[in-house]
Length: 244
Image (cartoon, rainbow, N blue to C red):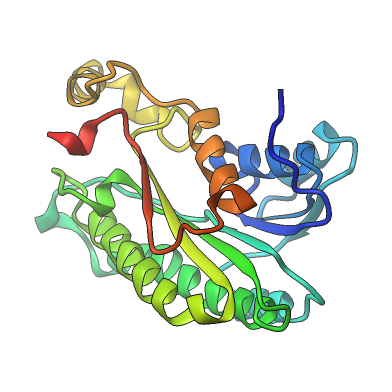
């Protein structure tokens, strides 16, 4: 049963072609929001729109493009931004190429910052809004072969807190969701390594990998009025990983 009513809200979700982003877009639409799903692969967006009988609007655009931020600024209203687009390339610290560093910083940090900045410029016209950054448990800890990813997600956690302080007085809430490993198209190849999968399970006290709906439910809470007094917070959906 859906207990969160988002009727009348306008929400924009980045990285919405599949995985967590698609899950968030669907749930927001089911809850009554007018949803704009953003991704760069047209076929993914077409499938998402078809699965919701065309309720979801789509923008097929590269979110690292400055044209994307301009398009956000052109919206007449925006109530929710789910800043979900991101990527990872696990490898040892001493083999990370400058090109890899630049690519992850551009998408995971620069794009998140500029999308949030553009969204806030629209939200402040109406004196309210909720910005949700998709972070990670890796924004709270360190991990082998994930130096760049950890760095980018720690940056998102800092951004979340600083934005919350600055934007709170004008009615805009800013929070992050920090999941553990979730079974998505991006992470599925990692779990083909039995040793790595067992390591992940051993690190999660609850003993299982998170599912998309676990993260989507956290996003819905932060998007809705149920979290009206919550800002500057990182909502860990990690099964206890960071409790170690």
